[in-house]
Length: 293
Image 1 (cartoon, rainbow, N blue to C red):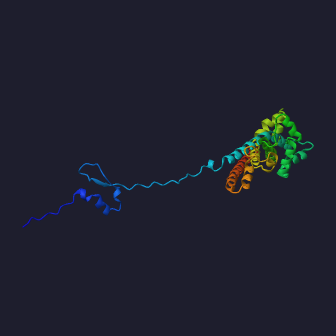
Image 2: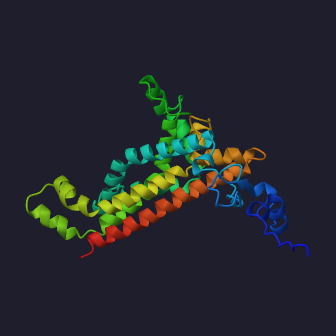
Image 3: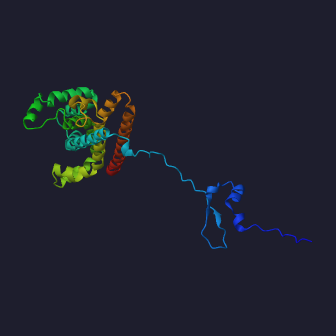
């Protein structure tokens, strides 16, 4: 009787061959690699499928600084510069005028009040034309200023002058309301102790109305940033020299296809205006709490 053959057991190498593994596993044979391991371990092992990393967009999202072109940023910086100098130069005169209207009684007080608020009533173009007649190179004051080397027409300094005149009424009104809220008996008590009027104002009135002064300055700053009519009439719309934020928006709207740039500038103007209004309201409330009895 012939000897029976025992069934042979498949060797580890043949059981784990790439061809057999590819039939049992949906993973392609390229995902199999040979391991350099001791003889007791299988020679072939299955590699893990590569993890898919999240693919980034081909172009990153634009930063806020890339939303505006260099010309647009130049217009924004010029507007901030013009508004800053307009407020800084008109603030001492605004404090003096507000104090005179709130505390003093003199002939022509009503006329002064009307002249202060006149820029709010007149059209801005009319105000700019009057500035051009007065401070232009052929004007009564402009010709004299040109002899000493000061030129305002078609310069950023002229834009600051126009913005200061248009924002002056708002500044005076805010400061005047703060002065009128101060109890006059505090000033009278300081005067009875021998303090002079100027010293009474510096030591008593000024510390109490300081939040109101800041509120008026912020309102004037916001108005100066948004000034358009008087500025474009007096100093024109020269890019890089006199083109402020409103003038840049007007220029972009005149160019076909530039509505997106104008919209971004409008968003910047709205953000500056809203921030100034919120800060001014907060300062006004602080001034009211400061002078409250």
